[in-house]
Length: 48
Image 1 (cartoon, rainbow, N blue to C red):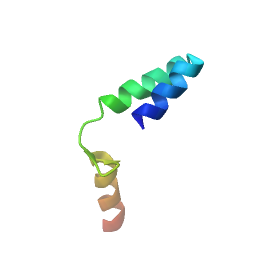
Image 2 (cartoon, helix red, strand yellow):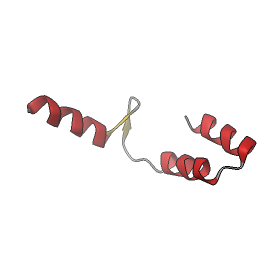
Image 3 (tube, rainbow, N blue to C red):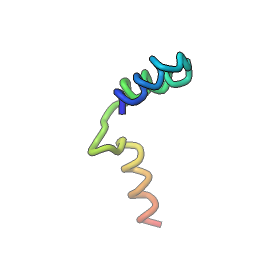
């Protein structure tokens, strides 16, 4: 995903794409393509 965002940024110069890339770089606890927060939300939805 980082490669894609970098490629888009380098071709367009879109600052929002760059900021997205930086956010993805700093994303803690990525588990098989899902963040820990998404995992928590999934378990909450199942418990309802």
